[in-house]
Amino acid sequence: MRNQWKKLLTSMLIVCLLFSSIVAAGVKDVKAEQMIGENTDSDMSEEYDVKLTYDVTGTWDGHSNVEVKLTNILDEKIEDWEIKIPADFEIKNIWNAKVISEQDNEYVIHNADWNQDIDVKGSVSFGMMVQNDAKIKLPEYCTVNRICVSAEEENYKLEYTEYSNWDDKVNGKITITNTSDKRIEDWSLMLDGNFQIENIWNAVITESFQEDDEQDTYYYDLENAVYNQNIEVGQSVEFGFIIKCQDKVEIIMNCLKWE
Image (cartoon, rainbow, N blue to C red):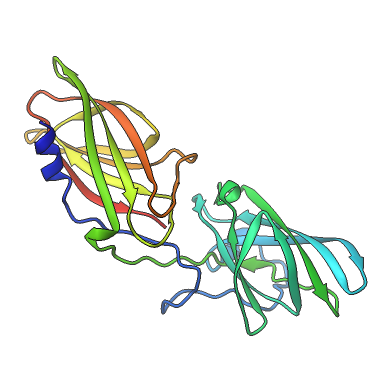
């Protein structure tokens, strides 16, 4: 049975990687001007992803401490955030986030591991110490920038391990190894097969359905369990499950992606 799994795990994978530089055509940049008027978050969510509020908590000798809060104004969770903000100041230090790049008076700022997801109507915060000659002014709304690319087969590795089987049940795990030169963030997986998942750990089923009762094929969308959402270069994560299957187990990996 193990050989059958290994053979089927060679299906093509589509991979989405979060890039530190925003280079793809069609990716929206953050607008520099402060939004004015009586616009609501609902109005802005058609064009923007997060609302930005900030508080200058201290100033001294041309320096300031600034606390920034990003609030999700979309109707879905934001997995990974990376914003571009105009800046007439220089960031000297930053916490709960990291600076990816600075060019032409604009900073690209990326989440930290512990605040990379923003729930619907939820917020995350980061702080920075800046050197400034004038009063600090940041945009009120921002977009979150992500781009996706296809991964070559050598950039990932999937392995199946079977622990036991009894009656119509199978207990096993799938291991995902990052063999690329970029960090994986927020992995998710689509698979289908002739089985029903009865229990799963270290991953979450976000959607499942059976397209044809006669074919007895089930389709699953899986995503990480938050605490294992990132895979460093050369590192692995794994998730396990107990499945119910009347016949010999067949599984196909349709799409593995990360953002």
